[in-house]
Image 1: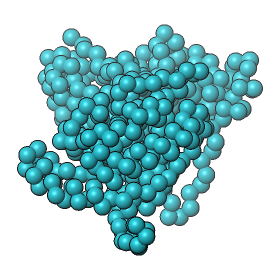
Image 2: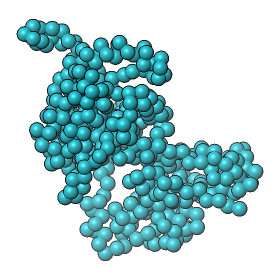
Image 3: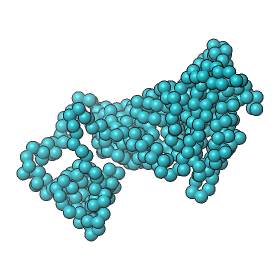
Length: 419
């Protein structure tokens, strides 16, 4: 019995993914719930497990292909005794037609005649559909080499490389502006690396935030003396009781939730011509990983105590670096905190994490001379930066919010006493 393997639901607003890596080949044995493929989305890497035990009968898509949620990607013959060794011949047989067509130029011209006509009953994969639409092609006119007459990305690329005109009437007009920009030649010492799905999304979302929001940044500095003293006084007892270290981030999260309750516009977002105000503080904590920046969200942070916040932060950081965060853990935040200080940043202007309207940037704590009661003292100081959307947050609200955070950090007892 053949069992289908489809792309699972990937979370809010995620509709497609890229096949990053197949763990199995055709003919390989697979156990139920064993990972068979790794998908890369614009937010996280996800493994898809086999729904049943058996043998891999067919891999519908190749590594690098884009697939939509619910798309069929593989077939498993349930109960079949597959072996890894048997996969090698099967793998070699599949690409044989392409290998025969590649060496000689003369047979290559005859390839379209040997290929079957595209079967338009099968839906086009996202990557193929994008190529067809961008170049305004008629898929039925392109020779197909895929199984059951399916059109592959290589078929479309070969068709375009052959210089054949698009048969649709509007092709000359539509195809010209959509033509992809040619890649430049590399110099000695240069290497071209394809952007990951996550990195492409980071780039797109950050640019969208700059283009959409009326983004401004206001700055302040905070004296960390009392917070450092508080942490040093209680860190050993805190770790002994709760099993987690007492860091700075939990204090800043608490300070932000206090300020967000007083200045709700900073916690709101714009939806069309409306403002959406939120009676909760879902705080995103930016985490740098080898794959790029991810922002897991601490739900209802205003209701959590310091131990719960620190435990959640440690857990998020570990799973973010291992690529094990779930999609639901990285969506729906209402405000973000980014700590560039861990990398040594002294001052920066963070970019909004749309559709949020505010983001706080923490920075390096540095001993600096400051005036205290008419005298110059050396104090541990940190610059704070609040970037905000001026369409919903006025300057008075932004500055007052940041001052409230400053007050809570400079006098941590304010957080506990709510004053």
